[in-house]
Length: 124
Figure 1 (cartoon, rainbow, N blue to C red):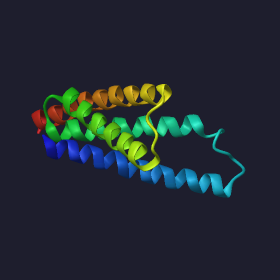
Figure 2 (figure 1 turned 120 degrees about the vertical axis):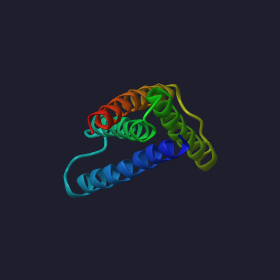
Figure 3 (figure 1 turned 30 degrees about the vertical axis):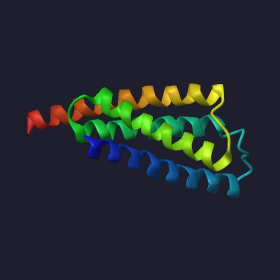
């Protein structure tokens, strides 16, 4: 169970790093600015959380909502600690809203991941 959550969190951070690198290149090499790509970056963040929950649910093979939720909660805790300890800031109301959305998205990913993993193991 803990291993599945760890796989999910690692998936989130790897996909976020890759996405950040791609967007940094786009911002550097084109005339786009951060405000024009803001919603695309938010979409990438939600997609990363979905895939992290999906991986956690698929590895755990049961209780996907709980595995996805734990994955999202650990991600939120890491981001909160980085922001609080590293930048001496707490979450704003807007950030809390995003992180609640991240948690729900990771839970949905976990539910779908369990169902996909379970249906594959039954047919094999």
